[in-house]
Length: 479
Image 1 (cartoon, rainbow, N blue to C red):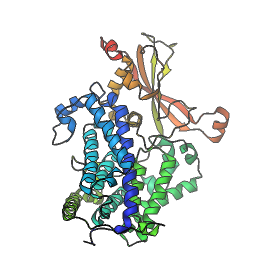
Image 2 (spheres, rainbow, N blue to C red):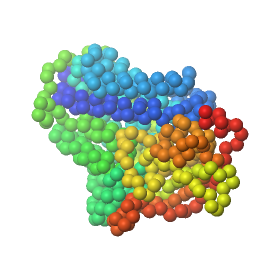
Image 3 (cartoon, one colour):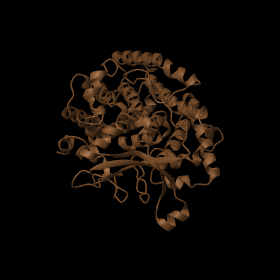
Image 4 (cartoon, helix red, strand yellow):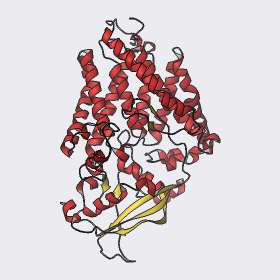
């Protein structure tokens, strides 16, 4: 069945699968290190409470049948080890059926986490990792050439990621149409990186050129993915270059790196030195049947994102089935013009007054201390820091988790404090905690030279008045 495989893409398959396994490692480690405070049995949004009200058919997960923190940790660390084995080439060292089962297990384990992750796992790159991971199951291993149908589905996914993001912009904020969004975006994006200050201070004509190039790459270039080679490879290369620019300018977890891997899967390996494939045995019939059946399923399910792309009320980052097989993507349909940040402080005083000394908690990624240069964390995902950005946009984004977060600070909860960079109360929890809303902006070149500060901040208002922990919970959670 020579029509079924594309031998020239064997190198693209290896790079894609090994890179995807590496991102799985990051995702599982991120879950393992953060889950206890976020969704653990005593977390802000506990999994057991979620599974009691949401049936398994709506959120299929291993944890629907049983949950414990030990089991979750086993799943997260076990998934990281399995992904690490696939990075090392385990998928190509075993027979094709075993390789497919390994990839399927990896996908199922992460699906179990995402489907009980609630607000903390509501980001588009979670669905993108799952959709891409399911296609990796079908991509095969060294026993056969990459299936043409799966390569097509990977391009179809990349097309939806880029084209959907382009449409949501051109239909959304007018600043995308007049090419001024990047006057603000580098400063107001959820989590700036170490170069974001410098990107923000680029000349405005260059910002306009960035916007125009973004429209070309997201609205025009994706169509060329379905053109003959080498046109498709050139189109994929332009997408890789754009995504690397985004990697340098901010922190977007593994979104950019996963998009890069999807683009690499569209590149013809025969165009590279040593890219010619050696003769491989034909694909077994059962494998052909499985791939064809899965292709039909995904194409049928694709009707939902296609309708969304064509709709004037296009939504971003939505899953249409609980298995996250086919999803819709997009980001930054609206760009904020100003940046507000929540600063959380505590005090030892039971009855605070005008002269009370408040000490500030420090977060790992989100802006806090004006003199601290933003750090690079992507592809690692700091879930609390990202949700703090949303909470500053509107208290409605913080309704279900912000109160429990403050309670755990008052209780001195160790798992919650591990999510932070700095705890100003290392010996005992504070008596009261409050939250203030500040307006942040990047300093100018002159301000940076004179003060050494990367940010300038101005108090806007009180976000949460001073609160204290009532009852015995303080002793219980601090223990």
